[in-house]
Image 1 (cartoon, rainbow, N blue to C red):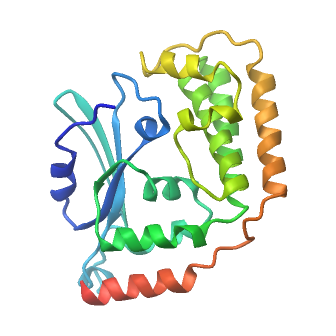
Image 2: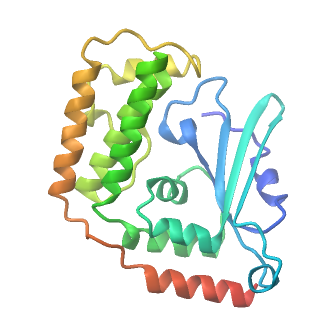
Amino acid sequence: MNLPGWLEEVAASQPHPLAFATVSGAHLYGFPSVDSDVDLRGVHRLPLEEVVGLRTGPETLERTWTRDGVEVDLVTHDLAKFCRLLLNRNGYVLEQLLSPLVVASSPVHEELVALAPRCLTRHHAHHYLGFARTQWRLHAQSGELKPLLYTFRVLATGTHLMRTGEVVADLTRLYSYGPPYLPELVAAKREAEHGAAPSVASAEQDVARMTAALESARDGSSLPEAATAQDALHALVVRIRLNS
C-alpha cells in the first residue's frame, strides 16, 4: 500500500495540535485504487480559551486539496466532540481511532484506544446496517463497483464486531463473511476508483444473506446495551483542557 511520505508533515502543520491522525477510507478498507484519494481523520485539541470564552474554536475542521497529484481529504474533530461521537454508537469514529494506518499519535491517542472497548455496544449494528442500505441503493442507481464493495465491507465489519467485539475495517481480512467472489471485486476496485461493477447474478441474494447474518449476530451478541466509558472520557477531556 503506497501512502505519501509527507502525511506526517500534513498532520504537524495543522492549526491546533493533533491527538492523533490516521488514514481511513479505501486504504483502511483494503481496496485503494491507484487513483484513490487519502482520507485523513483525527482529533485536534482546542486551547482552553477557545472553549470557555465567548469566541469558541471550531469543533470540526475540514479541508480538501491536492498535493503531488494526490487528493487529500482531512477532517478532524475537537477532543470533546470526538468523545461524544464515540459514545453515540458511531462506527466511523471507532474505525478511525483504531485504524492501524497511524500518521500521528500521542498519549491521548493511546488513552482513547484503551477506552474504545468500553464504547462498544450491540447497537453499533444499526450504524452498519444503515450504511449498507445506503450503499446498496447507491450501487443500484449508479452500477458502480465502489458502493457494492462498501456494502459488503460494512456488513462484514458489523457482523465481525457483533460476534467478536473486535473492530476490523479491512475487507480483505473478512472474506469468510462474504461470497467467494469478493477477492475478484477487490482486485477490480484497485484498478479504478469509479469503475463499473462486474455482473454478479447473486449479488442481491448475497447482500440479503449478509444483512440477515448481521441482524442475527446483533440479536445474539454479548456486547452491552450501553457504553461504560462516559466517566472516563469526561475525566480525560477535563484533564486535557485544564492542562492545555
